[in-house]
Length: 91
Image 1: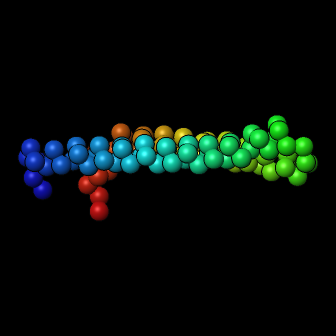
Image 2: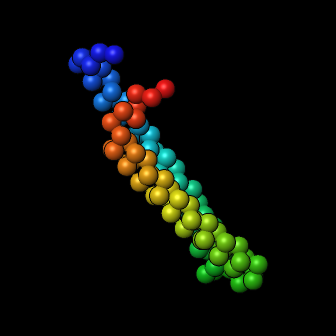
Image 3: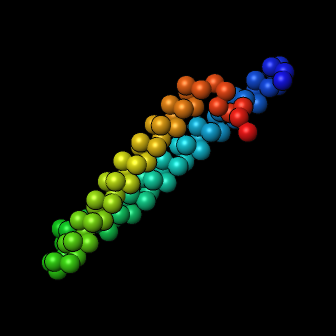
């Protein structure tokens, strides 16, 4: 395998695409969490039915978990890409 300038540029571009895909995935997690928050906040604070409060608490909890999973996944993949220079060479 050659390590010429073309290969280095291709590898750098592949790494940048991987980093951008990781960022888009994090944003998808955040967008999903915001949806849960949009359902949860009015259910807990403004609606008086008990079952709606339960729905709101479940939605808020799901939103927090969604953000936590997204951030955890983002950091894990970011570390993997940064720590393993040959990560993108694998099939």
